[in-house]
Image (cartoon, rainbow over all chains, first blue to last red; front, side, top):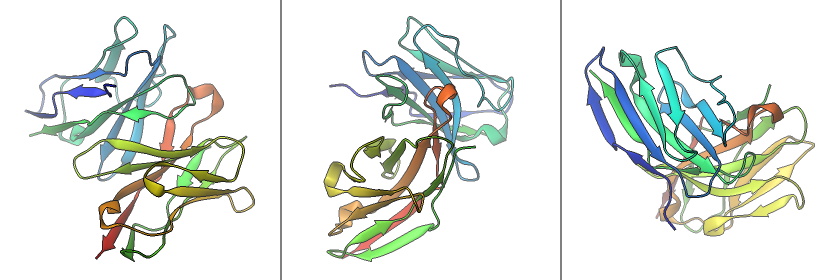
Length: 113
Length: 115
């Protein structure tokens, strides 16, 4: 079946602009996660959605970062007023339920110039 | 706090030889442990997990991992390495029970298998 998809695959933006990154999880998966992968910080958890519960935003690095999940499916991660340190690969993962293995999308490579 | 350590940045192995990628963990409570592999410019692919049961866990592509509670280790192994196994490997532990199953990753180990 179809895996997790993310768009765009690559995004180059100027410092100060806003960006939106999209994730389509595996159909039927109730848990959705966003992670960031960068050279200096490795793989970091950003935010977690489970069904209709309030999201766990504990990993978001600043208030410039936000995410939503509409209809329990597609998720959008928004970064406002991008900074150069936001440059990284943003990975989305979904899971049939929390605690189970997570299935990752190919990622969005964000470059802030 | 939950944490994972991968003590080797890089592991070099000759094709056909056995390989081991090391991982140690620190958790409160029972550990949920995972291995993932990342090929260049790709997302992470799930290899195997330990939640409970047999200490030897078998996964995808001929990989296995041994859970050792006394040594708090979860090393990834394969009896005979292939050149195509060359990739970046991540060990991960589930975060605290009340934090929704987020994964905490090690820094990764680059595996290089030479012909």
